[in-house]
Amino acid sequence: MNQNRTMLHGWGRYPRVEARLSAPANVEELRSLLRDDTAASCIVRGSGLSYGDSSLAADVIGGSGLRQTWKLDGETGLLRVAAGFSLREILGEIVAKGWFLPVLPGTSLVSLGGAIAADAHGKNHHRDGSFCEHLGELRIMLANGEVVTCSPVERPELFRASCGGMGLTGIILEAELQLARISSAYMLSASLPAANLGQCFDLLEEHGGAQYSVAWLDCLARGTSMGRGAVFLAEHATDGELHYCNRNTMGVPFAMPGMLLNRHSLAWFNAIYFHWRRIRAGNKRLGHDACFFPLDGIRNWNLLYGRAGFLQYQFVLPGDAAREGIRLILERVIDAGKGSFLSVLKKMGPANGNPLSFPLSGYTLALDFKREASLFPLLDDLDAMVLDHGGRIYLAKDARMSESVFRKGYPDWERFLEIKRRVDPEFRFRSAQSDRIGLTGAAQ
Image (cartoon, rainbow, N blue to C red; front, side, top):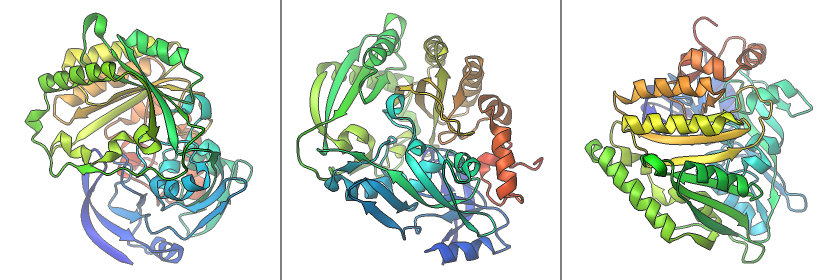
């Protein structure tokens, strides 16, 4: 088993920690590692694509070697697969056979285990729920090395705590997943311009029957144009070849100078992109990779934010509070001059009952900000606004949320902690994030 000391960070490149990284090649090596007293506490890291510190700790276990299981029932679409496979690898095998993953986040590079630990959601949450709602069962290695099976009917509390549990209940080894039937690898996509935030909301509501929907917002436009953007809709095509659509990629070779990202350059980019999307509005036929993972075509795009890295701030507001709350938050961001390349608005369906899952019925907005000292007071202000409107912040994107903000946003945290104490009484599984937000801190 390979072990080495290295500096690790998430996709946002902040924060960074020095860690002992272990890479077990199979379940037996993993069990042996957990019995090693030198690793008193640890966290599992899949592809390392969570944005903040949820996969960071002094001891980190790489999960990419957990790839020993692959079994697809071609008649029913029931897939049993090891947690170390990436969603891209899974799609590469199943699309040609007429199957598709039921929920996809914004990148195909995330591992299956990571998608489960974050209970990932996609552009179809309003219709199809989150990733874990399509699972049959999980196999998990507990802190004592025991491997158990859990599902909605067998050990249901462990199942629900592990779905969205950020790897804190145990190490996900494999999962049983119900795939969705498709007859084409292509997507029918529509792009609709919106003159302001109200129109973005109206279009998303009007097209609530679309299987996939998302809006890009210009987060620096002011006045009557505030929140202008483009709404993207998509459905699976019913004709065309069945093959994995893998695009050629370009890469960002090095971290860009941070001075290039400022209020003026971001305003310029947002304005150009808005007008380009308006010109290109209409219907298109796309490969599924271009439809779901546009940024996967740019390797290391996180380097665009410079050496200091960036923070993604994603929150969800429920029901009727969403429109007003998101408007106020956008106004605060605009006043602060903190523009974002990526400002993504999505309609969400109901919560699923998992104690640490992010979704609520309402709307979610994700904003990317260059890391700089003046950003953190703004984010503290946004935290208060999110809580005032009954919302919460996504753990998979978080890098600085406080314990009090977490507990107010996730009222079922105590139920999660009760389950964790039963399966991990010594708190072997813990991360920099879980310590910071009080789930595994010294007081526990």
